[in-house]
Length: 322
Picture 1 (cartoon, rainbow, N blue to C red):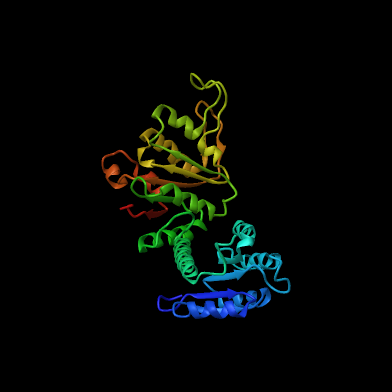
Picture 2 (picture 1 turned 90 degrees about the horizontal axis):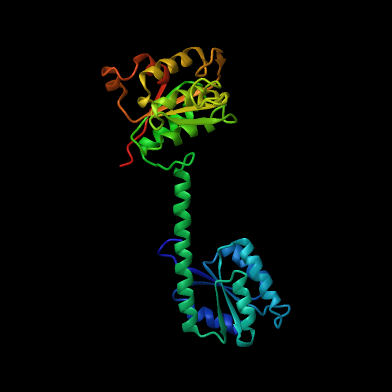
């Protein structure tokens, strides 16, 4: 509906005089469609798609029984659950009008209908209907821009979504670059969900959030008695990700000692638990992420160049939130 079009109103009433009176009163501001019973009212509703419907409860073939109007209301709302239906009823039928409100009608008018009151209620109903339509359109646009739970219609984010689609179908290692808060884990999870490993586990570990003394055990697991407090054998995150995806967040924070051990795993696809001697074969896809400049870290001797080449099979840069 454009701004230049009159809002369409459907009047469903078996009294020809009332229909004519309403049409005469509203014609200047509204495109008025008339119907004389429930059946023709439903047909007019389907074809004309009114913004608001004014519905008499007493309709043929039983004009003294509100159930005809209640049935018509139910059918209108079944066609459009957000339809704005205003009930017209006599003073003695106020309880039925309130019952109709409870079943989804927008408002009610008492007969004989005061045209000034009808115009006020119609104006409000049209305003509400337009607001709701605007909200629906915004939600639809947002839904079209959404991708795997992420929002973004900018060319940069569309490029990210394209990279996710392409890389998800491969088993190549991925390095995600971006500032804190740009959604690096969401990108990693999206790649996992779109991959052939989607039925396997998605295991994430933040390499910068775990103390260095515990990080090796967290990644590789440990054998019982391998250190003080190791009362039972424990699988690490790498082993837990078997058959799925391992996400190494903030890999730039990984200590050099563990970089060597991680590189060996990436080369050989095997690990040893802390305190263990058994080589354990692990099949998992590795996705890494960092918010630091790995080239600078390599120059400073803080990050191994050969590890960068292993984790950066495909690089996905994320735009800053700002």
